[in-house]
Image (tube, rainbow, N blue to C red):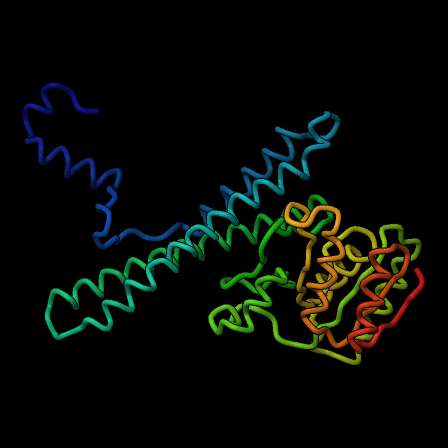
Length: 305
């Protein structure tokens, strides 16, 4: 803290420079940023502290808030996820400007400097996105260990450029778009699509896992397709997570289709043209999907659970 005597002895510029040296300073928007993206070890340590506080102090065992712990942790992981998504979209918005500048290169120093500036900006944003992805993946692993469930976003895909997820979960809309976009395809799983559909009540989870093990033995590059529902589909998703099998998730769009959403979801799932469908019958929606698969000539295997 500066005393009156100290401020009178130095110039205002010197005070500013000393503060910048001691506390750091952010560059103006658009200027080169020499700062480190992040301190990885400090960030992960801080993340662990935050999660410990949420679990042990905000929603500890023995309180009613403990019932909200899973929802609380899910929301925290989602906050990190959405930050990563926002930065990724910002990088995408720079792409047209980069292309225009590349086409405009005429050997002049001004155009070359502008191109370098945008490239550096895109690289910095990409590095920030990667940092938040790593934090999200670490928080998602903590979510899994604390709740026993795998964290997934309610909408969109769960992939990672920076760490090898046990199994990526791809939204069906992203998967369909990938067939027309080489950029998206680079982040989506390749392999043999095998769909699973089933009802909520399940008496024998091992039957589901055994059936999936058999299919994977035949198709080692298997990619699991399912509706993201409870019961049989949730067990299948956990099986995929434990086996390192990538997933494509077709969730019903209740807002757009109302009560018809599960049946429209069935159509979307089958539009992916899976190699086959494993059905664990028990509901009308499941039977609808299996009947439509047969009509399309897609092999169907029914398994009782």
